[in-house]
Amino acid sequence: MDINPEPKHRYKVEQPKWSSHAVIYQVNTRQFSKEGNFEGVRKGLSHIKSLGADIVWLMPINPIGDKHRKGELGSPYAVKDYLAVNAEFGTEQDFKALVEEAHRLSLKVIIDWVPNHSAWDNHLVTEHPEWYAKDYKGDFRPSPWWDWSDIIEFDYEQVGLRKYMINALCYWVEKFDIDGFRCDVAGYVPNDFWQQAVSALNKIKPVFMLAEWEDRDLHETAFNMTYAWSWNETLHELAYGKCSLDRLRKYYSWNERSWPQSAYRMTFVSNHDKNAWDGTQREQFGDALEACIALSVIGEGMPLIHNGQEAGETKRLAFFERDPIDWQNHEIGDLYRKLIALKKSKVVLGNGEYGARMIQVPNSKMDEVFSFVRHNEQEKMFVIINFSSEQVDVTFEEPLFEGDYTHWDSNEKSAFKSDTVRNLAPWQFEIWLT
Image (cartoon, rainbow, N blue to C red; front, top):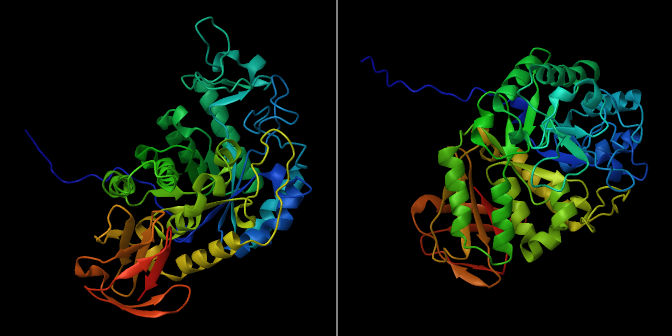
């Protein structure tokens, strides 16, 4: 028997250099501005840039179905036409102007793509009914077990559907020069389709692909980034005392050992789903919010800002109606700006293989305190987070953390030694830099 023990690296997605310290910003065009259109987003791009964001993710920009529509304006995820823009947002020329302005500001633009299902009145329903999944009665069906009555599912066993969807994806890159896609419920679509699609797209230009899913194998040949849903869920439960801190350690163990280091995981405290159905960032995380935001930015993963977080995210945005964001200067926006500036200033805080791994620093309060180092030969960052509602005194073990540091925000100097004790207020985080 011929046995070749040489490793074969399956994961072939190469991360572009521009993404090394990138941050992503989600835009709900309907709610982002008073105008609720592409022009309102275009005028807000300089604000997005000022936060330190690099990628602008636009929620679906296609026309919305009328049949079985939810609410007055409907869900943007009920697509009526994959090759058109929603007149609610403006014209094709308005969209082109938005993309051109983003590129002038060195921002990438990715658009939300809804491949798993369409609106009931998409023209494909009558032109190609064979492309749709059917229920046990032979009727078109919404996604099973979900309250998604305004959509019906596709059947990706149909070669014609695959060709149509790939051509539609290519259309947006060729005509509007967009930079990639955020793909809705990407795991409901076969992985080999994504391989086919990205292969075709990359022949036009290199694209950045974000999957709304949490599966390492999506990174094999197609996706640059996937959702860190389990990271978000763990921190939400930690904030309300519903799980132990070891669950967060298990997430990072899983991230390090089960996922390729090249894979970007999107870390977030809010997005359109969380905001609409689970509550605002403060509702979800309470007094732990600032610590969770800090970890999303300076831990492993690419941070997401959901539009309006920087203004305090004062309300749950209506999903099917107009409900513009209440814009204001806010301390959360200041926090994001400072943390993102820190991320971009340190090589060790890069995304994926561009950055350094998080290495746990054991401490005397492992049930309450999360502590780690990210370092290389030139830089070291020591992070301490009290994930509890109690004030704690904590000491640290093993020599990796020891050294002379400067506080990331106050510029306080401190020497950390084997007998150093830190007193932390409830939910307090500290970031120390050599």
